[in-house]
Image (cartoon, rainbow, N blue to C red; front, side):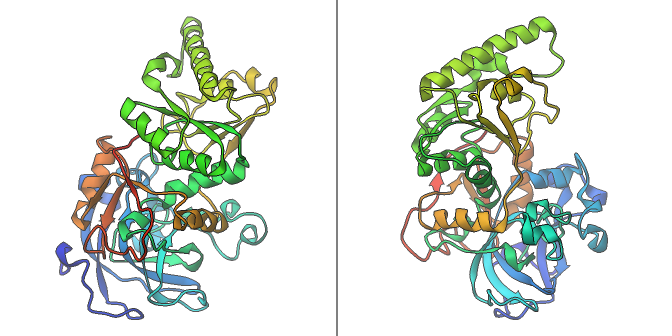
Length: 418
């Protein structure tokens, strides 16, 4: 390819002008497999913006597990979704910070040179749900950089104008790219789906992970009391630093995890451990949780339904341990508990959450910043569970601290994981 990886931070065009070609990490269907093999650098035509679209020069991009799935082609291949059939390639990446470079017809709020963060929800402006219900309910709803072709691991990306948010001036490019997908998801789950209030008690699974670190901070900002479930004392101390009342090491209650297909005796033993866990949660919080923050799924869901107080809410956005859930429904209906599904966030929720970030009330939690040549390696680390937290990739930015315009709290640097 003509574009060298070492030169991705250099451009010979000014805002408003686009080069013909760009460097991009690309997945093609014929090489789906391990990220280290599926993801390769190619020279790709730079897209042009359509109506209400914007081309952003990517300064930094955040790594998420969704593009491990895109690499593997499992559980489903991305190539039958969105605009992939039209273009035949997939540029991964669902988190980005960058500079508006060119705007399409109809875009009036943004202009070349604006510094932005990109949220990852796309939907057609023609869907009525966008205008009266919620964009997340639109038939056309897609996650940019996973279900769409033009993700963030490239010199330029194409997005809808409604995806743009002002970049917090107190954060660098790398820090600004490290929170969107997980933070905005956690915000919708707690603030809008569960109406989190001061004094609420909240149980957070995976509290030191990508979602959990923001759930803990949101609880603190709202005046709620959080207890985090983690896998080590080191991660527990991070969770307390972020504002949790205390933490529970899940290894001490390993027997509560459902594997599926338990015999009656095994289920009886499992349930006994869940009861002990629930007592521990109640002992820390002073009462059963009003809200359980779920994203683990099969292994933890029966315990979540049991733990949450009568009329309480279990909110779930994923199922990393398995999506076939098996739980005793008597504890749901007889105690009038609620199960709430949640998926990412709409643009208004993203805007409100981003404002908290700009005010320093919520901070990114970042493990490592890598160069553009590290994209495949970073995703391989996620695939093999060898990462310890959020990874940011420098693209247009030449250094880790570049992009910070004002003093203020930046990212918390920590070794974190689920």
